[in-house]
Length: 583
Image 1 (cartoon, rainbow, N blue to C red):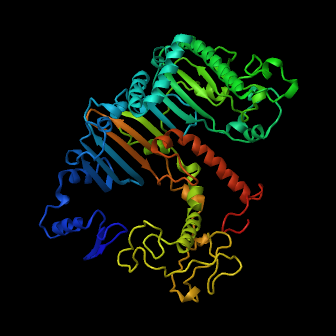
Image 2 (image 1 turned 30 degrees about the horizontal axis):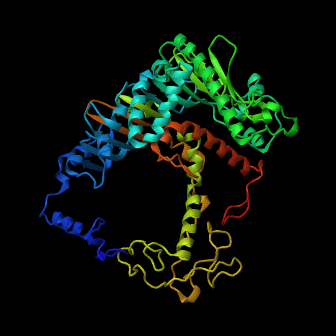
């Protein structure tokens, strides 16, 4: 059957082939090519050497789905710029496999791109590491992101890429770096970046969150000053911030410590000048009316408060960010700190976390279930993200059926109210009808929208779980509006048949995502117990998920505890969401 679209009379095709349904989405001509292969008139991809290679079991990994693209047979897209093509120059093939490794789900992306690489691909050409050479991390850490970077080379490559993508922004960055060198005598590349790396790790320390872990001097220092309370300060005080830490290898701790002194002096001057300039431009008087000092009334005088990094007492070189009382307070337990150790520099959410990050003398090593979970980690790592989903995913999975019930029922209601793609009353520009249906674009509506009155649903209809508050039942149910045929589909989940979070937790185990490189190829591999899910939005990209994952996991754990407290009646529940009864 040849199916039309809004713009073409012949857009795609489908047909039954014995026990299978074949769908040719590209164009009707594709259907002819598929039929020729079925009839033996053209060669089949089943015997293609690359497909055979990718279908083989690989060190316990059983591929189930696969795809590949040979760049030699793909012409450059029309309008593609020379710069864009240059960034991916050298890629001979891209392939993808999805399947199983024991009880785990596994995916493997591969770019066949022999070195030396150029453009964006050159970013991965640098020092590598293995599980035996991870940076030290706080005891008990179960999730982290580790990376190996030649920071000066990476800086140069990123700046070169940025110049082609956004010359104006790059020029401003160059000016800032030049000002830092000429005015403050600090060469960012030579004095800072060249002293750090290549091993870097980001993690969240175990235990209570920062908002509940501050004690002693930290609790007093986290925004001390007794400023006048304001709504923003009160809101920040209630925020729970994960105990994040970043550790970076340092080549010469003594030399870097001296340069850090100069850098902190420069940063403090820049902060003061920035605050003074902002205050002067806004005519800021500090919010104190006639009682403000004269110089502050004129704007930008010596009395304008500014944040600064203060050197902390102790043997180890350390600086902590301090906010003036006039600027309010950071969340409890939050006092960003830079601390220099013998072999690593730590940046932590507060002094205690930064100090603990440097206490470990040896690199992180897998133990328990992490040992088997990470057994297939590839060699030649440049980035590794390790996570344990058992802290938050069981609760998310346990609530998934109900969430789907709400989403699907709401989508059905919306579709019947405003039209579904390909159905009568579809939105302009939607694709053609479903295979085998008699529905066509732009055909007259045959399903009237449901009534919106909460008090008068259509005859035979009723509200359904997950629908917006007051939404009427489906027209088309028995006795539906205008005698329409029955089309109402309501998804109802029986809570008694759902597994508990504890039962699901027993089925989960740690996983990883790894980026590895050798002379011939670049690989990105993931191994996990269950596809990662995140309600309420995600981080937007795999890279962001890997970097922010440890912090997001701790935040989700806090949300899970809040939900559990609500269920026990310890916390006032939020207002009922659309279609739900108040708890």
